[in-house]
Image 1 (tube, one colour):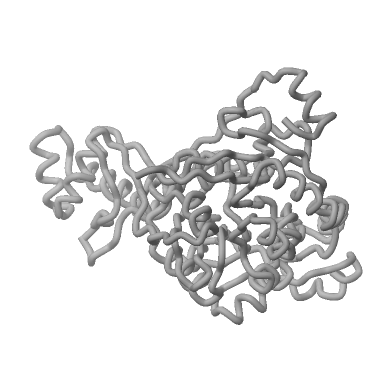
Image 2 (tube, each protein chain N blue to C red; image 1 turned 30 degrees about the horizontal axis):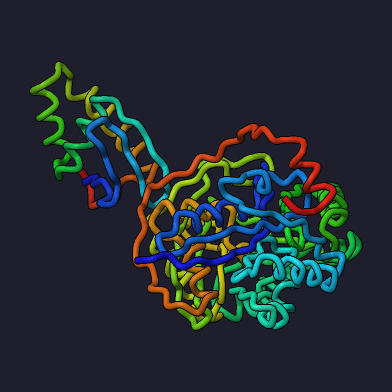
Length: 348
Length: 85
């Protein structure tokens, strides 16, 4: 079968110690037997490794941060579109999803397709809305409350037992053992990611994760459960293994069918000693470990691109259990000329 | 009687993999022999009889080591209990 030629733009090229999903998503697309892709990287920083990984990324454009506003970003995308004729755009950062979801129609008018959750799906799974989410969809979630200041937490402190988990609205989570630590982590996260901060009940157990893809009609296109076998001091999985876990898959199917989830997602779950599953977070995009799913037999990045193109995708029915990933660091040697080009011209 | 869970994979080299948790373990040759006997459906008396033929071991010591070993397997959730031995 002849491969379909597509121009695919994506962000999340920061393949660092807390990696974005861009490079693993590209690896999945490069492995595709159906898609012959030209990859256009969207970078926020001159030192993101992705732009210099020429075997994976064909061309990179610097883009303004979402916090600079929608207009500058769309102007830049428009410029990129004139040059590259992008067919599909895959945003890989939580923090930029809102902007791209809001701009879905504008992008479509430019000829750029996306495959993202709806605004309602995106909003209701926010960490600050998790208790309501759990109640609505019949999923066990730890008790949590959003706070805007330490004073707010003092008013609700008696509802929690220590330790508690202090979480940022997009990223970062710390376990705090007393009020003083809550204060420290509150300030640390708020300075980086803004408010609100979410205080969550600490559920003791093993963290397990599922990467999944919903077709937007309630069907799960694919899902692979995994346990991190090596966790860095930033809480990132540096190693993992696929699991045989029907309960995790049932929960994933239930959430996707009830919410009609559209796009990639990562479920973060805690399995307690009593074998109960608590959902602690839904990340509204494919995670950085998605290439493990590809290697285990489910090329979810390829399926996502095909769904974005309106093509038919048959749901995956199995995957290899016991497939492992071990992440590694590698000193890539780069030419100063290339750094100069990306820094000054914003293109490489 | 102790039974090894059906989904636990045990290789000839003594590598044990639990696909439900992703955990893996290594058995020494004696441990592997005992686990294979348990997996084949043998109870304590039958395992004792087989091991006594092959090795010089007094039943009292073997019983102590056997239950110590199977308790570890249970703690690691590799077994499911089906009545008493």
